[in-house]
Image 1 (spheres, rainbow, N blue to C red):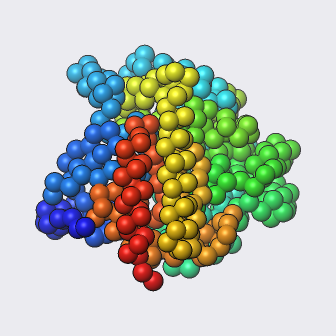
Image 2 (cartoon, rainbow, N blue to C red):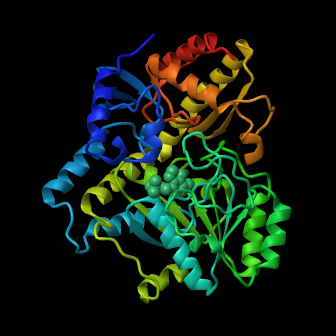
Length: 437
Ligand code: PMP
């Protein structure tokens, strides 16, 4: 099968004359055969300017937990826009949203709202430094915490030009033009290595303000923590007076109503949330211990943002969370069931076509890779995958009417169902049959 992309290609050329790079976020430029221009979306489907319709597993890089154009979300945002999109004054929607987040996330006593995951991480790091009076931040190789100067480090990625072959220990900037000063405070460790973690935290305890970690390494391989690893991280940080931050920008309101920390039963001091929180609207936040968040109230830590808590974003978040809590959180059961079927189906198709590969799954998020390893439990193993082959697979899937990320990460929404699963697995079957080399 093939698809027409003439109009998307024309628009990209036109866009490049006006918009730097022709796309609004660097990752989007990597899409093959060409970055697509969307027209509209509905439920699990998205349509482009050439008239193609795709089953969507990109889901705007994660946020569309209710699929496209969910009626409750559309109504809530429409109503907010009619009332006034932003005031620079407080409104009751912010209180309602913060109250709901505090009820849902086990670690949350207070919430601070911001606009993107990157900003939420910046605020969490600032709170940790102010709270401890220390400056170093421990982070893990292969995790992603946004693109601010404070934390963006390079790692091998087929999507990004800069990375090449960067190894743990080497704290190198993630982009040209990045100040290296902030990175002097970053201690980069391999993830899932309790020994390295304990040694480093004990040796540098007087300098380390925080450890920040994705609870599951979703950005590169959907790798779960080894049994006891996050518990060890919790124990050590508590003992040494270090702030434990879980970056739940992907997992928050995705793995369950209580986020990954609710599911895994590990209580961080602070979490960052974004993506699914707004169902696609630009909203994020930091949630956690009242005594740390009190630094905002006392004025010691600045928390700024002209459009923080704007009515459109807070209404979108409230509508999303209200849909997610309906029927005791049945949306999560649906999402997980769909993801389970897809993952089982993909595994048996890989076996049927004798293509070495595997899928790592974290609820409704999973990472499919072509790889000879039997298991992928750390970033080094993940980097043995055949990324070029997967990019060819993703391109061929697009021609079959299925939109997936060229990196291998899939998201499933609460509105993906049986029909989409069946059609997707049939497409994978056809594509794997023709995937040589
Ligand atoms: N943290 C994590 C774990 C993420 O996955 C991302 C985005 N992929 C971010 C932070 C940054 O979020 P944003 O793109 O909204 O700035």
